[in-house]
Length: 482
Image (tube, rainbow, N blue to C red):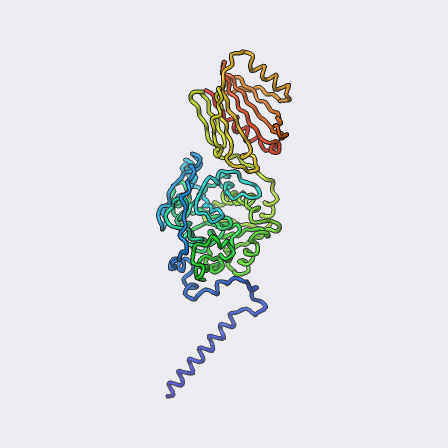
């Protein structure tokens, strides 16, 4: 009986000590972090805390309320710039665009870029016009020389599986890493991950799942998946655990790679601040840019990050960001890069030249040979509002070229004589007004080969006059005549 009482007293003392330790481990109420409307890591079940996000994610079986997918076509990428490949995943082979091998025998850094929105496919967005105030293309990376991978995910573009709205897509990102690391021209120790909006949330979840990425950049993520567009949720929304497995706020302590969250105050800035207030994880760096929205940080800051990646060459990453650097980048002047180009070749005419890859080509011949090249999009920008006409015709009059030059000069055009492939040529710069009163800047290039003439006519609205020269020069300088 005495031994029983002694044992019971010992147990009571241990229990009291345990309660005392719990209280001492808490900060005083006025020193605790601000309460949020989203649960923190401490709200996870004990088995999830001990196993971490990767184990909890792998053990969880999502239940889809809707099985959705698509079989949208995948546009062919610009040859020599990107390859269209298949990468292995848990659900099968998935499509991706991957930077082509530079062919220099070196291993290069690569970033995997996850676009926003709920679609799981890829299309020609990487080489479409990158708007300065809404550049979701991620093209700043490959424009700067950083190899880039654009993965599609389960259920998209004919891929196996279905949309899982931030669950299985995390597995696909990890699979994309494995594919990138296997490429002989990619440095497996310098693979980065980035994404915007839904893509930023996917990137943050992937950073919580694996430490394989050298650094992760999340533009405009959310803390709780409920803040995304719930009409896109394909999972069972009656199960709280489905939300939890898709919400980064619960798994912040699992982030091991340097992970940078960047957003404008007028976008998901409050969500990023909530993440910042919910963790002491030194690997998570949160930046909210005052006066910016959900899209405006992309163009200037992806350009900054591209340079950071190129300079991050050590055995361990030294990549860092400061609020001052980001603010300085936001004040930088807009840049309009050259588009991805394609080459047109006509053996019969003995001519070839480059033009923007996204442009469509239409035979508009009416007697003489003529091609019209234009963008299929109607964006208010240089690429989408330009038109190029290429014509080839015969003229027996030996003074035709001189007469045409005189005509243009009388119409106010500036003339510059030049040569193309040793053949006489001239450039003409001027303006034309259409029937609606709109003024267009025109750049003409004429090439004479005996009685054969080739004419390149480039048109753009006068509002883009100051931006047109690099693109016009890239087209005209690429002309080769045999």
